[in-house]
Length: 123
Image (tube, rainbow, N blue to C red; front, side):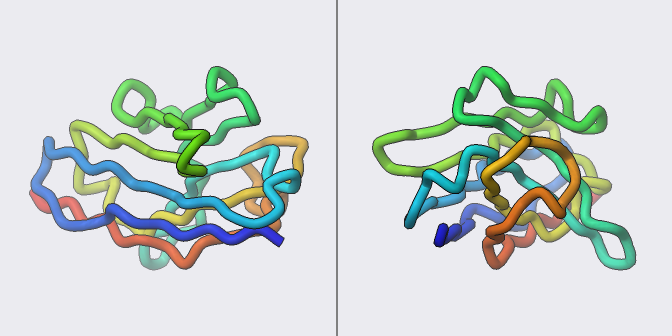
């Protein structure tokens, strides 16, 4: 089992920044792929950023490239999503997810999910 706990959401104005954190615990052998998804009301869950065991393997969806950055603190067991230049369309519940792989954008790949953290961007 893998446990994921997100934090760091909040409300900001357009152009603002937030850093989301996903604390990972349990059998991390099953967490070879990790990702951040988001879901806005009435919309499907969307993959935002993902990585394999090496943070250099990170990938981002087109709408956040150049604005969002993944990083990892191995000692703390935490995956971060730094979000800058936030836009109203980034408003959503953000979820951390983990799975054993192969890595990809489909939510079905990810076995473990956090409870979510809300991000709201006002214009």
